[in-house]
Length: 114
Image (cartoon, rainbow, N blue to C red):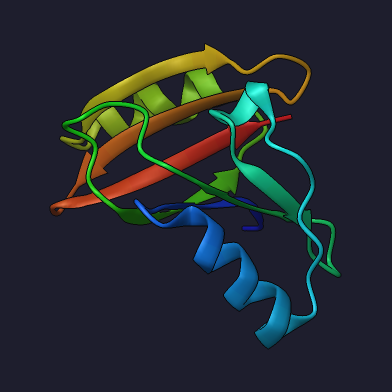
């Protein structure tokens, strides 16, 4: 299991980018339209950290981890068979791959296929 993308949604995304730059020496790029205008930094292991503002009024601040999967359709189907709610079915994100969000145990679980 490997983390592909760690997403942080906050009403104060700029201050969080500054915090992570100071604490961890990261460098964030310009807002990325493929990732909801998140500013993205690449971590030393190649995984990505994106920090963005909520995309809708109802979206709450959250830290969501997207785990890499080989076959997102299969992974989502298996999650659903185990009783997970599919919050966001497999969706292509520009050139970055396909993501999905499932909810199990009151926790949002992100999946990502490159």
